Length: 325
Image (cartoon, rainbow, N blue to C red; front, side):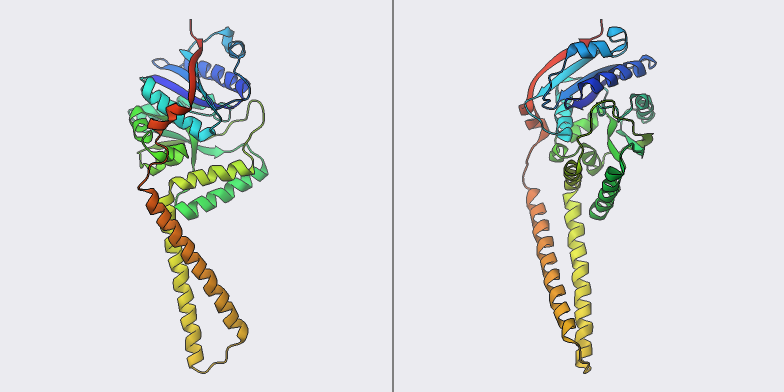
């Protein structure tokens, strides 16, 4: 197997070096796999230091990995878009059997990579394999926000959130993804929405090796909205159906009130005021649902960012940082 490990990096160069060293050890016991690392520099404010990588790797050199390469972007695009640019670059320049996508901060554990590859080979290297999170090493605030995000995601899309970026994916699947505009928004959600056959294995999330996480509340909400936007057609349909259900219930309640009035019942004024307010709310829901649905239908006629066509515009340069003697 010829494998490229794709890792976006934003300033976490020390952690990325440690992860590369751990990957080098993980591949040492795996015969028949030729692997190299492609680091996507997502507009880092700190320049990568090749000497730091050389120091962090075992015995100052590579023993299993073929090379560590660097793809620098012109500006910061964000984690998901850096993955999109990296996948397009590999698709166009690297003849490979598979791509391993993982984080560079240590939260995707290198010791779990052999399990992903074993599952990938059991599927005859035809389908993506994703790591399903079994345990997350995060604070209570993040866990609470993530739980709320999962609930909203299931309500809007009808799908649970089970996977992240940590995955192995074959070239045939990459060829499918690079012509989907939604890859610019969210990698894992695009794989799911593309209905690609896939399997998962359960792993624990590791610890950040250095630095602090930049996933604050704003970033978490933006990340969640990016994932939901991939399923915009499903979301618009569910919103429209939900609005229809609310309207139906509203009409039934109004009919029940009118029936009581026709029977001669005297209803208090606050009931009619409540009916008016509810009717106004229902009207607003209908307007929003229809506008959202029409906007979704209109978006189907346009290409926004087509990764295979546009991602190259964001690449500054490519170089080899380290190579095995």
